[in-house]
Length: 367
Ligand SMILES: *Cc1c(COP(=O)(O)O)cnc(C)c1O
Image (cartoon, rainbow, N blue to C red; front, side, top):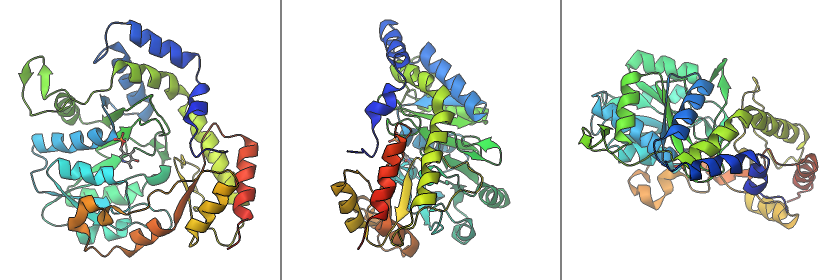
């Protein structure tokens, strides 16, 4: 059986360093806001070439806390609008709502599945305060165009980089391509912890200070609370594990790219459209999503041949019960993407023979 994402094999490659780091944290007697978190924050800030990194409890909180911090500093107010791709994972939209702001859903490009900047300007109103591009599947959004629109309308740009650790854009990494960025270290992400974790990166000192306080009960100083904060911190054990894995992230991303390029070059089944190859070679393929009108049939065929696949995502956010108020929206590209995508296994612990097996299985599919 080829698993979609074999976390046991992925993490086994970091032993014994991973167990040593976890043991060190466990035996230290200090579990929250200590040296391990501080060290990881500084390593990750350096990796992203950003001045500040703030560990959080998860990626959803990282997104929410950035927006809440902008509300506290007066850059945004309750009910202001944030433009977000309609086909993102629901977390991006939930974060906007949780911060008291209004998500405005924008259609993506059909090909890259990333937000289509040509459509952003028509969605801008007097209440728009930010654009929140998502580097979906590990491909960086069209940041030059997005930043130009943001500059013209004085909007913040907040990257949802939960699927794109280490991805590059014109020589710079995600995390420093806008005003602030949110990362998730959910175990299955390209940089995954041994549980939940997340981070905010930014070059804006005021935002960094405010976000750090909000994540810690609204407090800079113990028992002095200046914001109605939350409890969302990256714990010492997760930080220790992440510091072991971070130095291998580029090599892991390179292996994901190698697998993806092999898929793109070798999948010849006319019923299947692989993602378009990324010209700059900077895609980090968190997800390798093909498109096919015969998704259920292909999924069953691969399952029969011992290959697990997933769908990212089967239901678009505006069709979710939780987001009923958006159900009237006409978003045909988003709906088409959600109806056709299927994600093939694409992770750094896959062997060449696994990759060959997936290619043969996809090419042998007949409707
Ligand atoms: C995983 C993910 C998140 C949320 O991260 P969690 O750590 O699970 O809270 C947010 N946005 C996107 C695009 C994601 O893929």
